[in-house]
Image 1 (tube, rainbow, N blue to C red):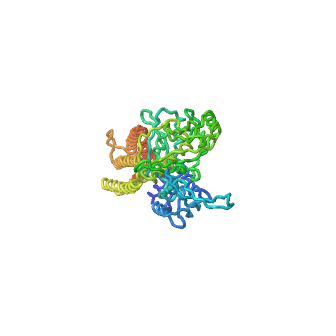
Image 2 (cartoon, rainbow, N blue to C red):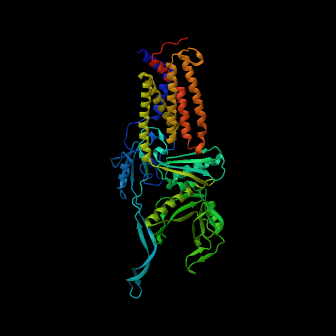
Image 3 (cartoon, rainbow, N blue to C red):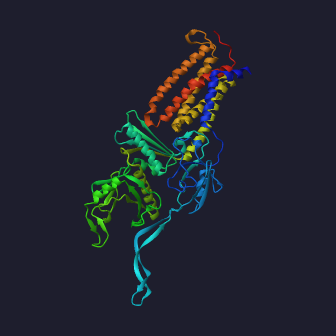
Length: 582
């Protein structure tokens, strides 16, 4: 009983207990597996237009356990991503959904994603109209052959309600892409940038991805040994095909009449339409087959430009000639087109109606196209291209062009299996270490403080990562293993020095306290050596090994200043050491 009193009143052990409790509070473990967490909400989707309030994407930097959790749809419990996607796959157009979350109850209506397009094909049909006959003063029916455009409905299914979801977090430990799945893109500016421009680039990237509909994003800058600057973008739950091209584009959008730039993306553009009423497949052009197995679809959307940009356009068109394709009486156009460029690549060339000559018009229609093996594939590609163009027009251009150095796509399935296996193997390793130490020193009591120290180090380290929002990836887990392994080495040194009856160093017998001081001298030397060895890794690999360096440094620091002193005292208590010999 006296030993247990010493155990819970000793300062070093109390400090360890406080650190462990604070770490558990930061990790905030929960034991409910109900519902699925909302990762992001697509802007302009049915979810974003829900009532009584829109469903919102989680704020950047929010803790995992604070995220909104979807519990049920139309009173059907949703407890996994598979159940959610199975449910939404059966939805029909115009269906009313009642979504219940842990924060609110929302109502929304599903929308159609079908697109009716006009083909570049015509046919002659009989059209009957009523005409007034002046001779007989009666109305007669007259049938004429009329050339009309053919139309086609491209069935793209039910529009996504706009939620990206994943398994509800059970703690605040943020998993990196290696464990959670997603895309990591390593970008490098093609020219030297200042710190202000670097901040602007990262903020623009965050805004682009937010406008595009991706919110669970980590954007950070890093440097290597040579001083080369890199930007690391980690996007949970997104494919590299979906975002890599968007990140690499400088987004320099320009509209020219001749060689004169009349407006640019960003500040010149005040509004970009992204809803179905004023954006989508262009009904005037539609889709067409340009060769066997190759189709093209055109898109269009409307924008509003600033009065200053509209004046530039009016000045650029004031002295242009009006031409008529079909001679006098046909529709008139100006002698020069307005050409659209994205990153100096021609997107489209649009004819300018004669009525726009010299007029400062702020409402303009933008168009482009997409290709595919089928009409549906071409329509899907066109809509994806439209979405990217709309995004860069809203956010404007980057100060410099970026180059994609590396793109990694990680499967969430592999990450989930790795976490489970790593947890199991970690527990078995701790148990194996305890068994080996018990056999080596023939005292089971020695294994108890060893297990307590190892578990405490892991818990405190995970709590620290949860507190600062650090994402644990494979490199960080390797750092944890190094820290715990180093801790075992130090514990063995402490055990040997504590159990030793004679201090053979300098040929004299020493007290156990002196032997313990010698043990901590060895431990501190090892600690500083490890920290110095980790510092270069902080910048190597374009910062991708930073997680390994950080967790190793923090882990060994926790061990040296918190767990090792407590371990030494626990060992003394468990072995019922005699009083100091002085």
